[in-house]
Length: 417
Ligand SMILES: *Cc1c(COP(=O)(O)O)cnc(C)c1O
Image 1 (cartoon, helix red, strand yellow):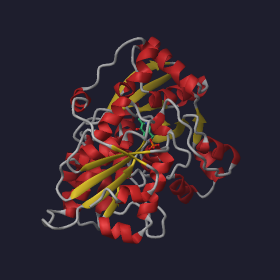
Image 2 (cartoon, helix red, strand yellow):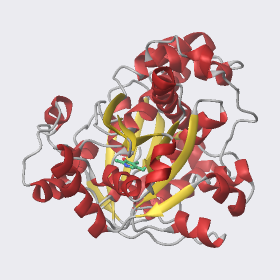
Image 3 (cartoon, helix red, strand yellow):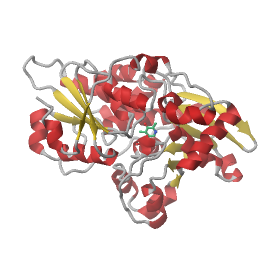
């Protein structure tokens, strides 16, 4: 329930279970696979007996693996993680976390203070968390998003809920939103008074379920051709990629993990120089990755020790806005598919790999969001309209409600009764 440990650090598993891929290939559905993979983490939990039910609730939509190219120059699939209610991969983690939290909270007393889920978002997390907790009794959600740095459709998904969801546009960037959340979680008195809980990607309850789709995709490939898969992952706060790293550490058939960042170069620079230099975020076309101080780096250092060791196991490449735009147009011309700007960073990184490297393993690009969420960027580049998926289309019709605040915690607490 608490995102950060009492000393301000992040929780990590003491040890990771190891699985034998051959023993997992018989499992058909993603929710059954989730229940199996996550069981060791729930052994001492009061939720142990409800894990299967939690997985059914959270994994109620597919992570679709589509084979895109298969030739001597490499075989490539795309793992589409945008078939959930808010059309981005954040739905997996948010729905799993909500399914766990609502069971822990149980049926609230009429007079009890609601649990307050505080979530800082660069655009997609907030919508996914709001959707997952909307109208759940005993819980309210405060969504902090950077004013003017999300697309119109993202903003609609952050602000269309009402009821138990409070949406606040913060004057500043995502880093300011994240700092506000951290400040509040560090204040024991506030945490107690408002029963604050985190739903950010720092929460283990979001990372663990995300490791499941890496497992499912790599197993599907393994079943087909006995080869491990390599992943190219659009990366911002390093939550999604970290879930992939955990899946690999748990013994799933995963070869390389390559991170694609936008012009926010903190991670590639760290791997290049060995020096960790967090900085202010730069606004880019792939705004959900505009992170200058990726929180989950702490977990990576905990896992592998130092930059040299991390650099031996991971690569990270930065993609400029100009290249993102070109890549969106180029991929559309090549295949007819429209990808979101985040997914396009991963396509670009894949396309710049050497031929020998591409033919060494089967590559899977992680498609993090539906292009329709970023229509103002993508449509002019491809010269076509992108139809929003049904659930997104439905949310776009609801009235929006939010307030704009300065980046200070008083502005938040004054809105909580
Ligand atoms: C959140 C998000 C990312 C970045 O994921 P991290 O876990 O923060 O690295 C990439 N693309 C989209 C569409 C996102 O919503």
